[in-house]
Image (tube, rainbow, N blue to C red; front, side, top):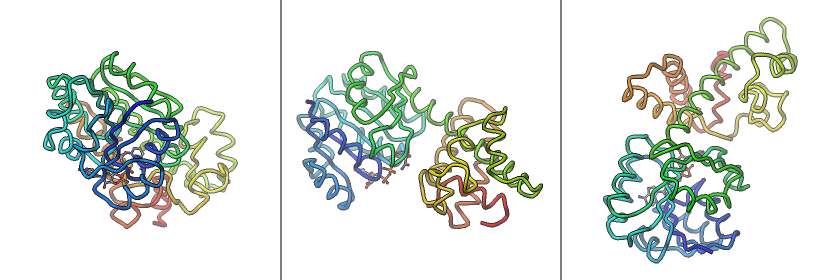
Length: 295
Ligand code: NAD
């Protein structure tokens, strides 16, 4: 059993903390939102009045926050890295920019701690079911310490390399997903105009060179994949706003590293249009409606 400080128990962090508790860990949680701490308390977490209090006595501190500025705020501005006893393991599961992630590693290391960036794939359903995929960046020592803890919340814990490589893997993965979802949506829309049923194109392309996760497992047209959000009017799943956030992170990283991502830039614009039309809270696969001219 480990003593874990958990900061940010929202839609993702809440169920993740609940799985840690189910696995026998002692969780001390903090969140700015009362609704989030109420839910965490119901799941068995002790609620701390501040991030610093949540960190007291913990060997491991997990953050699951909206963006890089929040992580920096908690770890540096709030003094968590400076005040926590040396040798503490910090695991940041938030999806944030690679630059901030690497800056957090540097600051944590300087303060004598171990740090892992460990963003996740799998959404709120994966967080609740304990089937997340963790993509981790950091030293072997940090990874080995974190692995058994992360394994209680996920089905896969992958070491992607050094500091920031977890975030790099996350945004590159979602760059593929954001682009392929639009490609699949275009093909299904064209197919429909040509008289091809979605189920038929799905049957063909999922066994041909057009095969990809966006089509096979998450088909944006209703019918072929019963569990996909397209069958429940695009209730998320993974929201279009989240996809837009991740594509913005990918574009920022591309600019900072002199990489060209022309399709990524176009995908970002299309998801921004979809979100600005009032659909940010829908599943990202709802972009097919806009491609069809119906959003
Ligand atoms: P959320 O908004 O539900 O939860 C974030 C929580 O952080 C909120 O409860 C908020 O009150 C809290 N918070 C903000 N600033 C804080 C601070 N300074 N101190 C303490 N608490 C603070 O968001 P979420 O959906 O849980 O996402 C969290 C992270 O996970 C994001 O980085 C997101 O990109 C990533 N992510 C989300 C999903 C998803 O499907 N929701 C999937 C993969 C990754």
